[in-house]
Length: 159
Ligand SMILES: [Zn+2]
Image (cartoon, rainbow, N blue to C red; front, side, top):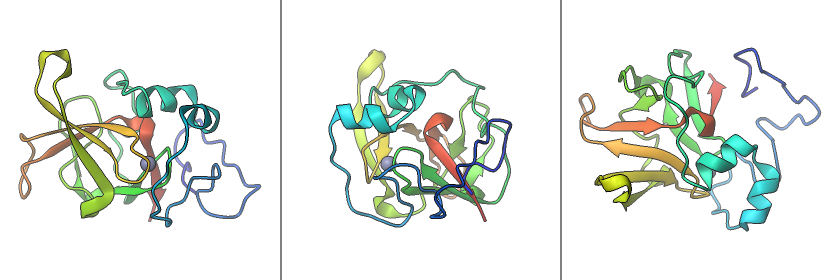
């Protein structure tokens, strides 16, 4: 199951389909999701909605994934889309889960973000356009990239 780690693991066993959370959630379906904000509000938790749909940022050092080293795959918590593999996760010291490479080319969308007087690149889920975080060019080799991601919007699937 996806949420097998941590103290708040309310593993909903009623549905045997792996990772099934709401109608639009799928770890295998690659079809784009286009639903209203109202609908998102219904299917996401308030924290997830704040990050994913309102481009919020979780407080640093609060994610259970911040120092988390299990082997597996990280998915978009809003829609199930696979985003990162655990072997591309690294300790960035920035307070948010960090990765240097996405799982595949189309898994993430890049958008220039000039808010807060900074020039940054926002990263969104390629399937549902949930706001995930930002990517910076000060990461480790081989990519030199640092994907700084809100843990609230990540689901982990253990290998
Ligand atoms: Zn998504």
